[in-house]
Amino acid sequence: MGRKDKEKRQKELKQFLEENPFYTDEELASHFNVSIQTIRLDRLALGIPELRERTKWVAQENYEKVKSITRAEIIGDLVDIKLNKEAISILDIEEDMLMENAKVAKAHYLFDQADSLAIALIDANVVLTGSARVRYKKPVYAGDRVIAKAVVKVKRKNAYLISVYSKVKGELVFKGQFIVTVQTPGDGGT
Image (cartoon, rainbow, N blue to C red; front, side, top):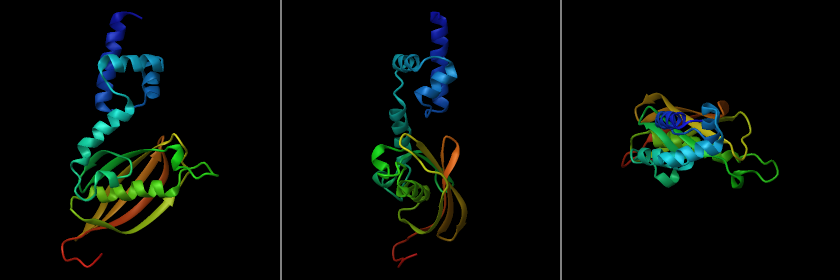
């Protein structure tokens, strides 16, 4: 492989990651038909951090837009948000998130990711979950990356109906319908 091929690949890699920074090294290696090590060396040469750091960088910009929930309360990394419209978060499932015997993710992690995303989506200081209807579609395992997308379906006065769809490798693993309400000073409840 010549120097020009390497320079061309690195230029394409940089553009590719600018459009979508969430590709893994494995996915990039497959796309460019090179080894994972070559991708890592290319990233290093270009000063492009690993996926985890790229995700955190993108998420940091989005956290600054949110008023209804703190960064620490959002489960997963908030990678895209259009307030009062839609939002996306990513949650990487780790060993300590698994049920001991079944070796699948504890259900509350998927619920908490979806619920916190629904709350973060609303442009208000205080937003509370009024109700949730959820379905767990498939088990999730250590190493899985859960991508949740929340979309506002209906707004009535101070209440929002939000649908959240969580997927692993494009397959639906969780879906939920959340009704969240905006609380104003003096509200006695939902």
